[in-house]
Image 1 (cartoon, rainbow, N blue to C red):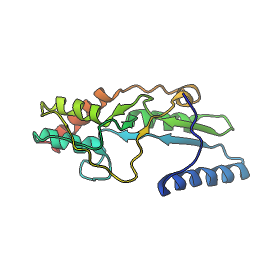
Image 2 (image 1 turned 180 degrees about the vertical axis):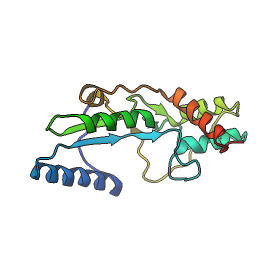
Image 3 (image 1 turned 90 degrees about the vertical axis):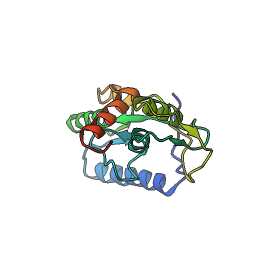
Image 4 (image 1 turned 90 degrees about the horizontal axis):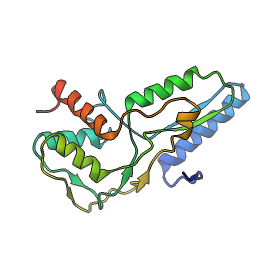
Length: 183
């Protein structure tokens, strides 16, 4: 895997990098260990099913459970690294319990891309809904491709991503149904 050097292209990305730099300076000044965990697209049971800002997985489940067709933006080949919250929690716990004094940098993800079209197809299939349709619409500011390099997650934290997207999407659908958020 290649290395991407810090060159923020949005306010969001610039503030994330600034936070890492501030924490790094403070921790160095006070000799406090630091773990910088860079979460990818976190999803899972317990995530707000009604907040439009918490992600597309719940939206896709709601649309397809109602028999609707998922509207897939651009050409559907936007790549994301969806990581189930369980793997994120395991990574946080491992970082908190790590006795080393040096700073740890780790991308927290599954480490494999899932395109938005593939995610839509998987979720539509779970609900026996119609195939998604590519609309070509765009959202300003969307990143085309974002996938974690999980080397540090595995080697430094000892956490191996354990839940692939298909299984994770099924778990989310089951949870949404069990909690009455899907018809």
